[in-house]
Length: 613
Ligand code: GCU
Image (cartoon, rainbow, N blue to C red):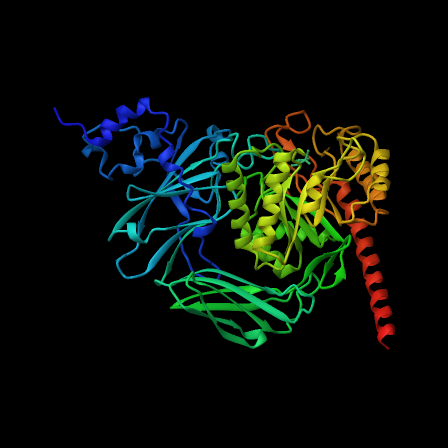
């Protein structure tokens, strides 16, 4: 009788072990293991990967990752899945969109592909970058567990260097999208719970020296004449910064921890939506080099004003999800550019990227086109606010988002959550996140989508004390029927800080089977928009709005005869082409606002000139 291999032995023993997952939840892949990837040419690992859904975590129990590749007929022991054989799926993708039988699948799935890097002993370091995997992603290389990452919308890196071998390597990712009580978001969301490796995957090669971070910004001292560069480099004592457009070329000494910063006199042309000026920035050290295209601008809160480069601002916005009828949460350059084109037609200068970090290309395109952005982590509705591990997950997602996007001039607001119940635990949790955002990036504003205090008919939330901009989600005319209350709230509130209506709107179905009047009709949705605009317009402390939402989007919990699995509050249907009447209502209001604001700015400029004359 053949002696059973340890793997075969384990396949029997593991049936009695329900603690099988613990060794694979180290969460060592996080914001501290990121490297700066701007300007690096990665080797794309997109394309077909072997794939298998794994509802019972059999792969982790039986250690599928430890199986050696061999021809099926050569195997001497029975196995339940062979990661080196079988069907494939394209990466990036959401498995729900690939097969009908996977549409509601929530659980684990295995992605496997070969990886050939020639001679890994060439002194180079090699880093895997996963743009995003929803939700927990465990990395295995040649049978060795290298760590896992939690958080469904931020990039992470895993260094492969010491585990690569000559010739063929095998890379495996185990992704789990199950909704649980301790994740961020928790298990109840008003968007579809996609799963999979749904953004790009690449391999980056570096010398021994690695540039881990580069943050370049205008010093927020109001002078607009000083630029600061904060860098982190592993394996060097200095780094060279070049910003050719500003005549900057200087060495930055690094401390023992590889960190350094420099503040330089410079008078950059300021970035704004009207003048989205970007500068090429390059950092090099020890043979490694990275680059970025950075806009320099100043965003600040002064009293109840939001000011961009010293000028008061009204945010003419719209909220957007990452959702597509065909591709799920996978986005593309065309999809993003269509989104911004529609925002432009709406006369927007601003978008709320709800409720999680969107693809990094969104902020890069917004930098180029001149849009302002609210970016957010999915601390959404109920969260385990008293669970330290949940707080660390939320904090890490925030740190990864800030480190990924803090060179983006378009990003003006970090939002730490949405519509959370006002408890002591929630206050401590979200104050901690707001403080974290400020500490990582003092050059931007913090916010959260709070709720109106309906008991006191006022805009007030204990969190407001700890954030710069008070986001308010209010649905008068939809969830709240009395518009008069919104008028009263407007009169009763004196928030002392800028308020942005981060959500308002109503469902409006169009097309076959749509109601002609009443709730869920386009006519009713239009009436809500007209009344909302009329009520909000005179409130001076409202400094912006991002109605909910640009496109109808997929969501499981919406199943009435007009929704059928979609939230129908979009100004445009899920085909991302068919518009509803409120699109024109909002566009007209924003056009007026833009003219009014331009006239006010011109008046202020004339007054300033007269003063100095
Ligand atoms: C909430 C929530 C959104 C949701 C919307 C709605 O405010 O923030 O995520 O989709 O309302 O009910 O349509």
